[in-house]
Amino acid sequence: MLDRVADPEIAVLSLWDLGVLQDVQLASDEELRISPAWTTDWISADGREALRVYGIAPPADDVVCPLCEWSESQLISEFGSIACKALHRCGHCGETFDYFKRL
Image 1 (cartoon, rainbow, N blue to C red):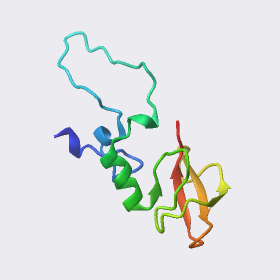
Image 2: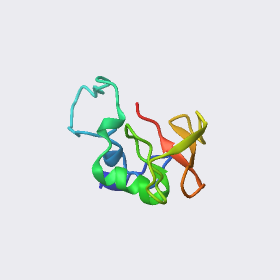
Image 3: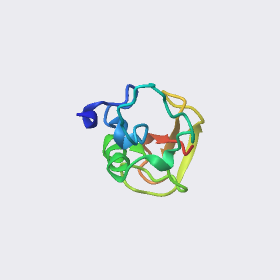
């Protein structure tokens, strides 16, 4: 059931794929684990592929165009439509695309 809970800002990702949810347990004290801090390393392989298919380059050491898979791009803006994305232009196909920043 939780696989269908979408991220409110990037609806192609479930909270599982994003890595925000890692374990669910019924607890009477209602504690919430807030450490370690979330990192983009927790995004699943399925989540990374969903980002790419949607047109957003997934977080990686090298930014790769999700449209033509070219590995050279120009940073246009440090911030995209949301703070965790940056705007790039592909050096091969010339298209602009969002890159999900590595955190």
